[in-house]
Image 1: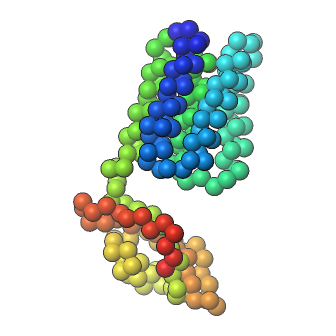
Image 2: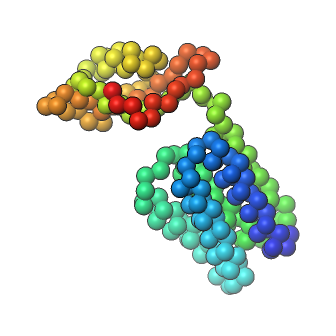
Image 3: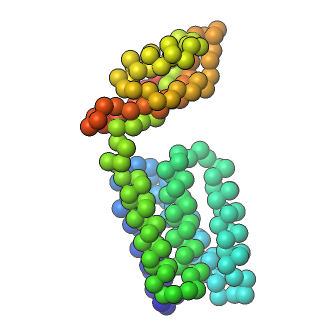
Length: 193
């Protein structure tokens, strides 16, 4: 497949990833520009490297360096990391694909399909995770679980105490929970309890 066609295919794939999957589901505008910028930047660098004698080794090294720098600069959720690596992979696949003509487009399609399915809103929708601040210092795991189930109205699968303040009587806890079949987990973002 001609290089320009591969570049165009990459731009279509990253547009589907960002505007078709990520933004409609998560609505973080700042990461839209990050995903697009990373993809096009990697596409440009990998495109210029693919025509030189340097080869794929440097391209993969670039992939690693960019991911380390970006991931250390701000806190990202795990699904955002997955989108980030998908944007990087799409940018590398186009210019550095040297095998069969169908391989790079097929791998791009595979990345998009996996992200569509893995981040689908209906997948595990009754499961949730929250970090809660309780206005009491709770040290007993059983008491903590009962209290959290009462607050959330859900079955607690795991509760990890992140911080316990006996002076100010607060407990910060990371909770993994699920609701009864068919009931969707509401977002408690920004709620302190």
